[in-house]
Length: 116
Image (cartoon, rainbow, N blue to C red; front, side):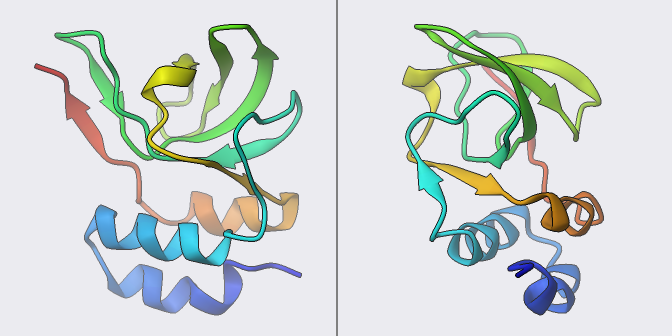
């Protein structure tokens, strides 16, 4: 069952990325994990540590590689591969089902920040 579809109108009405992410996390709350698996889609809150870089605080990622320090994956908001370290994850990773991916891609919930 697609968990995003019932809240898609509410997500589209809200243009605040923080509120959107909170709604998404609540909807996906029954599939949280501390460590995603290769091949899974996921979203999470991320706080980069490297100063002077721009990053997506609410990434939507296809996980491609796991490491001791974190993971690498395709960030759909950037349309580029990014690395994510475990220490910078602000909580759990929310697993996204394939049938929910298009709905999340239609929402502009990515939050782009310049880390100072």
